[in-house]
Image: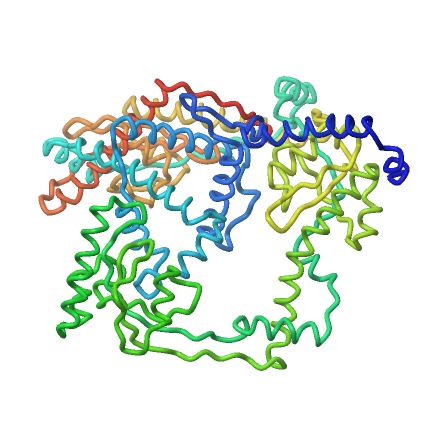
Amino acid sequence: MLQVIRDKAQGWIAWAIVILISIPFALWGIQSYLGVGSEPVAATVNGTEITQRTLDNQFQRFRQQLREQLGAGYRPEMFDDTRVRKEVLNRLIRDELLQQTSNRMGLRAGSSMIQSTILSMPTFQKDGRYDQQTYERALRLQGISAAGFEDRVRRALVSEQLSQAVQVGSFITQEELDERQRLVKQKREFSYFVLPASDFKLTEELSDDEIRSYYEANESAFISPEKVKVEYILLDATTAGGTIDVNEEILRGYYENNEDEFGLPEQRQASHILILAAADAEQNAVDEAQAKIDALAERLSNGESFAELAKQNSQDPGSAATGGDLGLFGKGVMDPAFEAAVFALEEGEVSEPVRSSFGFHLIKLTGIKDGSVKPFDEARTQVEAAYRKFEGERLYFEMAEQLADLSYEDPGSLEPAASALELDIQQSDWITREQGSGVFAKPKVRTATYSDDVLKENNNSELIEIDGTSSLVLRVLDHQESSVKPLDEVKDQISETLQQQKAEQQTEAEAEKRLAEITAGSALSDVAGSYAVTGPLSVDRNDRQIPPGLSSALFRTAKPGAGGSTPGSAKLAGGDFAIYLLTGVTEGVVDAETNQQQLDSLRRMLARDHYEMVLNDLESRADVEILLNTESE
C-alpha cells in the first residue's frame, strides 16, 4: 500500500497533499510552544494558575512523606485519596496566596540565604556536616532538580518572613498567663458510678415493620458504590530487564565498562574555607568575596593554621566548626569546579582560590583513600542485576511503545499484546471510583478505568504511565452499578443498630431519673444501688484514670458552694452514662519558674491562631476558582 502511494504521489497533487498535512503539524508545534491547551488547570488564585501536574506532584510527595513517617505502619487504604487531594490543593492555594502577599509586601530571600539554609539542613548532612552526595540523592528521590528545590526553599523562606512578622506581633499579658495556670492546674474532687448501656438492651425481637421503616428512612446508609474488576498488563523496567538474554561475554563487557559500580572508587578527604558568592550575585558582592578569599590565601601563605582560619572565617555552617573538614567523598559528589580542584591536589597541598556555584573556596587535601574493585567472579550476581536494570530501563520505553500500539490496534482484547511481548495478564479486585489498592490507588488509573471509552465502549485503555519506569494497559472485566443493598443483606446490621439506639435511650432516661434523685437530696451511694461507686477522687484535666467523656463534663460543671456539691451526668463511649457528684475544686498554684516556658508556649499558640486568621482573611478576599473536580479524581 505504501509503495503504491509512493509511486502515484507525483507532481503538484503530491505537493498539495504535503502542504495540507504540514499545516496542522506546524500549528501543533506552535501550539506546544505557546502552551495552548498544554496542561489542565486545577485552580486559579487571583489569576495565577495551579496546574494539575503541580497538584499530582505535591500529592505524590505527601504520600511519600506519609510512607517515610509511618514506616511499616503505612497502609494506603487508611487514607481517602479524594480528601487528601482536596487538602493538598488547599495547601497549594494558600501557599500561592502567601507568595502573592509576600511579593506585594516586598519580602525577599536572597541567594546567600537560600544556600546557607540548604547547607544547614540536617536532611542533607552526614556525620554532622553537609554532604553533596546526600543532597543530590535526596533530590533524585523526590524527582526534583536543584534549581527547583532552591526555588522551593526560596518560597518557604519568604513565607516564613510573613509568619514571623505575625508571631512577633502576638503577645499575652501576665494576668492572662496566671489565670491559665490556675485553670490548667486545677483539681476537682468527685465520686461517680456508671450505668452500662448493655444492662438496658431489649430482650424482645424487633418487628419487621420497625426494621423496614429504618431501612426506608436511611437508604443512603446502605448504598453499595459503583465498582469494576479489570484485567491489566503491567510493564516496568524490572519486568523488561527479566526478558533479556545474558551470557558471560556480555556481563564481562558491562563489568569492565562500569568497574566503579562493583567496588569502592578512590575517595578523598578535604577541608575548605568558603566565602559565599551566589552565581547570580551582583558584581560588587563578587568582588568583595574575591577580596576576602585572597586575603585568607595570603594569611595561609604566611603560615597561619588552615583549621583556625576556617573556624573563624568560613561561611559554611556545616563544616566551619570542625576546621572546614568535609570528610571522605568520591567523584560525582561535589560541585564540578570544586571536585576538579580537589582531585588535582597532592595530599597536604592547598589550592588557589576556586570559584563554585556557592562562592569562593580555599581547599586543603587532607587524605586519599585508594579505591578497590571486586573480581568479576565475586561480583557476577551484582553485575547481572545491574546489567538487567540498565538494559531494562532502556528496553522499557521500547516495550511501552509496543504495548501502547498493540493494545490500540486490537482494542477488544489484551491477549495479542500480552502474547507478543510475553507479559502476564493480571486481574484486580473490585475498584470503586474513590478507592483501589496497589496501582489502582492512583487517581489517574481509576479515572482511566471509569472513562467512557473503557467502561462504556469496553475498549482497552490507553497506556497509563504510573511513574518514569512503569505503566499499564487495562480493560474492564465486570461492572456493577451503584445500588442500595437489599434489606435481607443489611437486616442484621439494622437490628443491631436499633437495639443499640434503644438501649442508649433507656440508659439516658435512667441516668436522668437517678440524677434527679441526687438533686432532690438523696446520697450518691443510695442512688447508685447495685452499681459500684468510685471515689472520692481528686483529678486534674489530664488524668487518665477516668473516661474522657466524664473528664470533659466534670471540668465544665459549675463549682459547688462552700460545703456543697454539684451533681451531673456524662455520656460515655458505647452509650454508657456516668452519674457523678462534684464536691470540691482546688485552684492551680501559679508557679513563677514555669511562667516563662508557658508564656513562650502560649505565644506560639496565639501566633499560630493569628497566622491562621491572616490566612483565612487572605483567602476570603482572594479570587480563588477551583476548576478540577476533586470529587472524582
